[in-house]
Image (cartoon, rainbow, N blue to C red; front, top):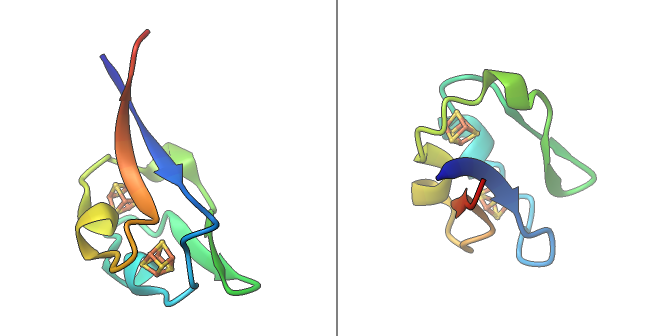
Length: 64
Ligand code: SF4
Ligand code: SF4
């Protein structure tokens, strides 16, 4: 199983909590939505998923 970071922009209100807690600086807020600025830095730690109050960002397991 491969894991990937998913953003549901419909649910994101651009609060910036995920970006503030990301230890790798992967996430940036642009036009009141979260943007994955550099996915290559993401260590899939799950901090963004745990901190988002709106369940708008999460790690998903995908079949490879
Ligand atoms: S999983 Fe971790 S490293 Fe990746 S974007 Fe979320 S907080 Fe940042
Ligand atoms: S914490 Fe959730 S709602 Fe806030 S900017 Fe991040 S993804 Fe969007």
